[in-house]
Length: 165
Image 1: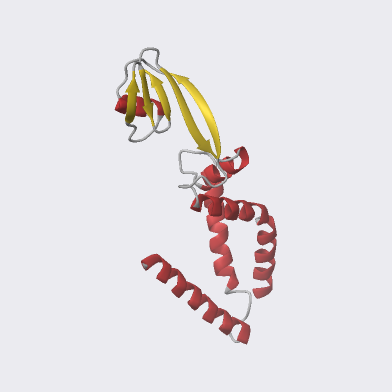
Image 2: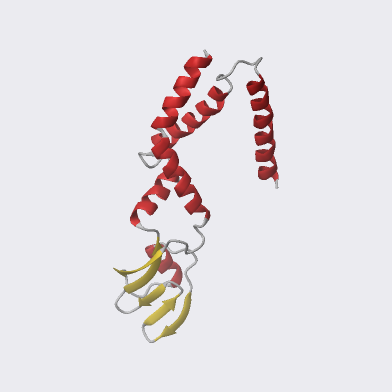
């Protein structure tokens, strides 16, 4: 049994190296999502209805809590750009990750509305298999197994401390 678990553990690990690398990189990048780390500024222009209020414009261009900072003539300025009230022209400055990194983080955050959420479920189940199979790789009477239990206990304790701090 332990030899089979080692084999399954090894080859599933090799198979998942690409996706584990992608999840690791995107997870680290997501830590900095509230900063401009690695983001590039892009200017977008849109046409919306004229004479919208700040709340209506925010809903239209999907900017939360949009507030006009100043208004000069027909042009209203907000933190991300400008809105011409008479023509409906909107210029927005957005900061986005480069294309590949953006795709990776979207995959990382996939939910049930996106078809790739099955990949997230498969990956999560694979990680769970790694956890369980690690305990079947060595016989319980061996010193490696006993040391492994100490490390597993320490890891669990560390995780609980991080959760409750």
